Image 1 (cartoon, rainbow, N blue to C red):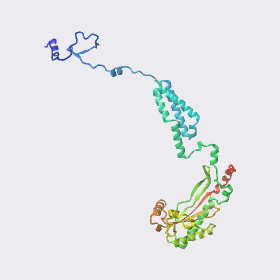
Image 2: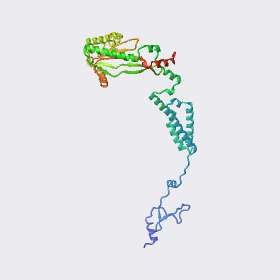
Image 3: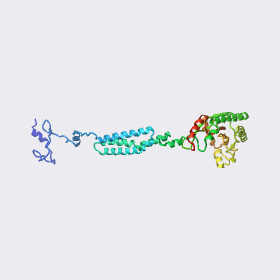
Image 4: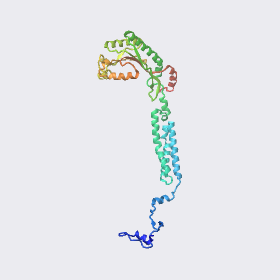
Length: 374
């Protein structure tokens, strides 16, 4: 068995250059800590406790949130709910009232005060985030977008503006004129009969067959005050020949037949927009009809009406043989793909603006009394 002194001497060998061994009892004033020793009595090295470890062992100090933080958070949430309620109700004008503006300034002040206080900082930060996301500016922007998309501006208008926009007539046309002219029902019946006569006459003489393009179309007329009147614009179904009409002489004959039918029904003679006699500039004729010469034009457009009544008749003739550049063909291909009508041929239809339905005549007269002198 090795004696302890001899065993200890083994660890003292080879100590050249090492710092001197502390004196017995240690240096004066040195900090003493309880050391751990092994079974032979030798000290065991232990790591000194770190500051982090000490902090972990220290009990965490918990502070309850202060009342200012709760006040700021609750106020911010309630204000956001109020703004959302106004948004959903469509009251865009209410968002910019002086009351809400002052209230938001007060809430912003409370939130800032909460953020500066030690015990209300966390709740104040949450309240600040809520305020930044939902405030008068952001909610007002959303409301404006919603109003623009839906077209509902009623909440922003005065009663006088609403009254003006509800005007049932149109500018420059008196109530007596509207009631004296052809009604929507009259125009519909007359246009259908006239189109049927034209188709029959041309079919009997030249053997043409026809394809209907779409149904009638009704569009409310604007009343000149930001709203819609009770009058409508009528467009009849259009009809187009299944056979092309490419010979110049035949085109003239066809237009003469149409003119005879319409004159018999009380309308004026046809007028040619595409003819140089229309006084349109040659550049305009080339742009719309291909050339300034009717014999080489790919499109003819003839017109007449029954003024002072509102019926207007159009006859448009498409001729792809006079379309070397293919501009008309591309346009007609798109129309054919959409409606299935022939790419070329003669198209006829009626248009009539500012019509009042017989069913609305009584209501129109009653409403117009409220706008006497308007």
